[in-house]
Image (cartoon, rainbow, N blue to C red; front, top):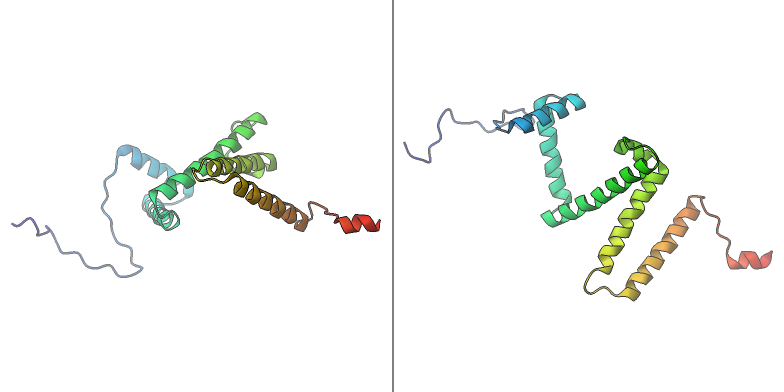
Length: 165
C-alpha cells in the first residue's frame, strides 16, 4: 500500500447546506468547556462547536493579522478591566459585564480608560508630532461638544446670541 492512498470508503463532496460529519479529537478540558458552553447557550455540543468555529472565521475577516487581533483584544481587555474595577469600587465586585456596562458611570470610565490608552499609544510613537496630536485632540473635543449639543445634552450659546441679550 502506498502512503498516498487513503483508507476506507472514498468521501463524497458535501451538498451545499447539507450537514456533514466532522471527526475531531480534543482534550478532556476542551470537551468539558464545550459541553458547559453548549448547555449555557441551549445548543448541542455539535451546534456549539460549529458556532464557535464560525465566530473564529468571522474574527479573521475583522482582524486580518495576528497583530491587529492582539491590539483589539488588549483594548477590549482594558475596557473590561476598568469596567469591573469601577463596579467593585461602587460595591458590586460580582457584577457581570452586562451589569456594569448598563451602569452609565462604569461604562463611561471604561470608555475613557480606553481613550486614554489610545492617546498614550499615539504619544509613544517615535514620529509623533505633539502639535499635530494636540490639534487632533482639539478637533475631537469640538466633535464631542457638537454631539452633546445634537443629543440635547448641552446648550451652546453662540457669542452673537449673548450680545443680543
